[in-house]
Image (cartoon, rainbow, N blue to C red; front, side, top):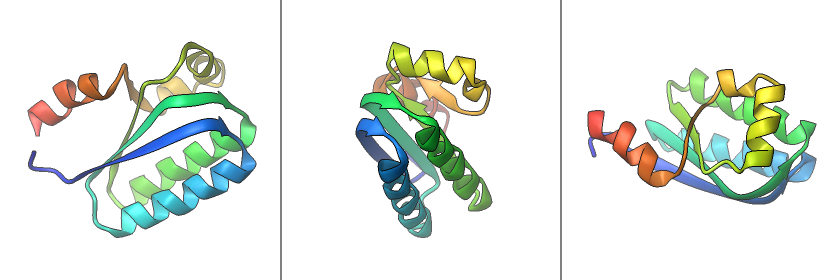
Length: 108
């Protein structure tokens, strides 16, 4: 792998409190000079509007730092929410980490 990749694993409910933690974590990761950030959402059960806002903030932070942001392992309920809110057009998602590595890392 030529690019430096950081994987951030989320779990539980992505709400206002967890969203603030996510913002801090992404900010810290971006400061390390990472080139690609993969947020693994396999253990995320539910996302509320604050959680969606935190993901949008994460996207803005990574774009400002010229870091590529990807999501993987999104469950059906979260995927439906992404489709309803058009977030599926903003975030590039992968079925799982293997899919991410196959599609993204093989071309790096």
